Each structure stands twice: as C-alpha cells, then as structure tokens.
Amino acid sequence: MDRIRILGGAPLEGSIPISGAKNAALPLMIAALLTEDEVVLENVPRLADVAQLKRILSNHGVDISIRGRRHGQTEDDGETLTINAKTIVDTTAPYDLVSTMRASFWVVGPLVARMGHAKVSLPGGCAIGTRPVDFLLQVLEVLGAQIEIDAGYVIATARHGLKGGHIKFPKVSVGATHTALMAASLADGETLIENAAREPEVKDLADLLIKMGAKIEGAGTSTIKVTGVSKLHGATHAVIPDRIETGTYAIAVAMAGGDVILQNTRADLLDSALETLRSAGAVVESVPHGIRVARNGNGIQAVDVTTEPFPGFPTDLQAQFMALATRGQGTSKIRETIFENRFMHVQELARLGAKVRLDGDTAYVDGVDRLKGAPVMATDLRASVSLVIGGLVAEGETIINRIYHLDRGFERLEHKLGRCGARIERISG
Ligand SMILES: CC(=O)N[C@H]1[C@@H](OP(=O)(O)OP(=O)(O)OC[C@H]2O[C@@H](n3ccc(=O)[nH]c3=O)[C@H](O)[C@@H]2O)O[C@H](CO)[C@@H](O)[C@@H]1O
Ligand SMILES: C=C(OP(=O)(O)O)C(=O)O
Image (cartoon, rainbow, N blue to C red; front, side):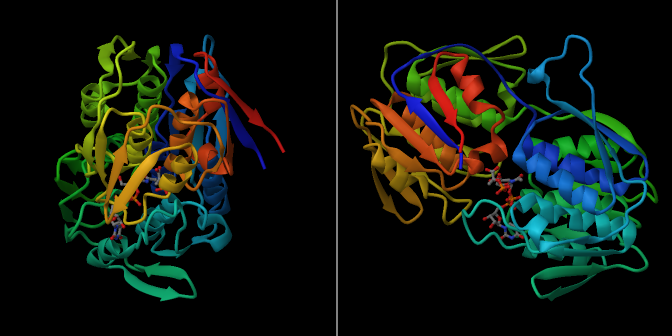
C-alpha cells in the first residue's frame, strides 16, 4: 500500500493549480444518464472517485472517452470527458461498485426518471457518520416512485414516469437536492424544492441541466422550482474549481508559512472559510484567476468555527482547520454539526503532539509550540489531508499510511505541494 512521507519545516512558495471540484464532477457525470445525447465535461479532476464513477456508468452501458489535450493544455488542466448514455443496458448499480463511494448512489434519480426503474446498492463513502439515504428516497416517493429495500438494495420503480411534487427537506442535504434536481427535470409537471442545499456544486449541476434543456429556477437559493420536460439533450460544461482543495492548500500555506498563488479558483466559493483563515492571521486576497495566501512571521491565532451548510463554514474543511489550530496561540473551538462522527483525525493528530479535547460535537484545541513527526493513519478523505498539513510543520519525518483515502479527492497532492518547496514524497508498495 502506498504511503506519503513528509519532512516538516519547509515554507511553501510558488503556485498551486486547483483542479475541478470532485463534488461537482460526480453529479455532473451522473446527470449524463438523463439524455441519449453526448455530454462533454471539461476540467474533470483525475481522482479515484471519478475513475470509480466511470466504472459504475460503464456498467449501465454508458460510453465514456477522454478527449486528447488541446494545444497549450497541460496536466494542470483536467480531463475532458465525453459521456454518451445513448443506451442504458442495465439499471442495476451493484454493491461491489457502489459500496466505496457515497455519490454513486445518486444514479438512482436519473435511472428511475429516464428508465422507470433502478436497483442501486446502499452506498458507502467516508465513514463520518451513519449517512442515511431517507431524504433521497423521500424525493423519489414524492415524485411518484415506488420504493422497496431488499437485501441491501434500493429498488425504485415508476413504470409510467415520475410526476412533479412538493419536496420540503427537514435538513439541508446536498445529495438529496442533487437527486431532486435530476429526477424532477424529467418528471411530468412542476416540482417545488424547499430547504434546498445552496452549495456551489448544486448550482453547477443546475447550470448543466439548464444547458441540457431543463427548466430550473432558483438554484443556489433554498427554494428551487423545476418544471419537467419530456427529453433532455446534450451539452458542454466545465466543472467549477474545487473549493475544498482550494481551502486545504490555503490552510497548508497558513500552517507552513510562505506565499502561494492558488490558480484557477475563486474566493466566492469559500468566503466563510477564507474569512476564518484571515482571523487566524493569514493574508488572503483575490488575484486575477486565483487567490494569494501568505503568512510571514506572525503566529497563528486561535479560531472558533462551527460547520454549517453553504454559505457557512464547510464540514469538508473542519479537519484541515483543526490541524492548523494545533499550532494556534491559545485554545480553538471547533464544532461539527453536519456529521456525528467526523473527529477521527483527532487521535492521529495527537500522535504528532496535538492537544485536543472532545466534548460531544465540539473539539477544543490547545495550541502547542511544536509538532513532532510520527507514523499516522489516514481514516477518511479530509482527515487524511489534515495529517499532511500537520506533517508540513512537524519536526522530522511523518509517514501517512492508508493514503487511498487521499487519492479519492486530491489530485497529485505530493506534486502540487512539492513544487512549492514541501519535502513530500509518495512511497509505493
Ligand atoms: C460527494 C459529495 O458531494 N459529498 C459531500 C456531500 O455529501 P452528502 O450529500 O452525502 O451530504 P448531505 O448534505 O446529504 O448530508 C448532510 C446531513 O444530512 C444527513 N442526511 C443526508 C441525506 C439523507 O437522506 N438523510 C440524512 O439524514 C446526513 O447524515 C448529514 O448529517 O455533502 C456533504 C455536506 O456538505 C459533504 O461533506 C460531502 O463531501
Ligand atoms: C465526505 C466526502 O466525500 P463522500 O461524500 O464521497 O464520502 C468529502 O468529499 O469530503
């Protein structure tokens, strides 16, 4: 199994290209199931989750090819995928394909909307909470599908197609909002979605669906109206920048010190996290096509953050901020309100010398003067990268085991940090 080795202490200087967002690319690829025509997606990140979704879509009979690089494009530009779901040969998404990734379950909406049937294994993904799918099933039921759960599979049937309805989520859910948008786009009549997720990835999905001919109003707000159409057509769309990758490298610079331009990204995708980073003492400013982050000399201030749905502080940056807080001056308070089991990085950060106390949904982090390198284990995607951030300043050698989690969501991480001066390498085998 591959490992990451880091020798701490080097500041970061230079530029880091930000990839397309994993959490946008996945639902965009799934949306291609809604049409017989070709969907072309640009700026798709090269990630294990994207590769896994390609396998899932191929199993349904979808043809996916990678377009060659155009003149002047480099590895930093992401892939262009041509996705053709002309014929869906199988409406089953089996356990062995779906169990590794949460988003794979989202094929259920488009399959039942277009084919009237879907049999999809209950999903896996990061083990950060129980992560039920009840809201997604409610969406399909409100739109007229019959739902049965049998031997770990959800079987959704709508032989005469879906019908518009009124969906009111009890809690904001990104995946349930994606499901509602995709299913309602091909339903008969109007669907009103209340308490919808406002995450930029939801807006990006709606933007693609609109290009495909869907009638959607209000995406990006908490009330969305979808008027169903009988057919969607092909479209070309570029995936938005990855706000979590952006925030992660911004935190890495705040931690290690230095001055870095994060290229091909936008501050408005993560205002709340960048504001917290400023309050921690980093310089954060928008520059053409990116964001500059710097920390020179001054220390890291303690932070007080609570995770919330967008536009609040994102849960997917909680572990990374905790890593930063381990070196803060004073005690930071970090409250996790989205997932009930998202503190697994605490015991691994402790191996590096971090002092963290847990009290229910809140972590209190007492800043320490130094971290010391140690062998640690990646437990989930964002927890893994928090250990990388810790390793950047830990004295001596940090070895991160089980980095397959990292490869799910960070493209060429060791290359991106290494080109800014971090002493980081992948050890294969
Ligand atoms: C691939 C992807 O985009 N993953 C993101 C997505 O996950 P995902 O879409 O799975 O997360 P949700 O927004 O659905 O989860 C929010 C909360 O709602 C709960 N819930 C959700 C669905 C449901 O049917 N029932 C239910 O109770 C969840 O347990 C959680 O407590 O949004 C999360 C919240 O921003 C991010 O951390 C994940 O990185
Ligand atoms: C939790 C995440 O992914 P998933 O929803 O696929 O588990 C994540 O991207 O941080």
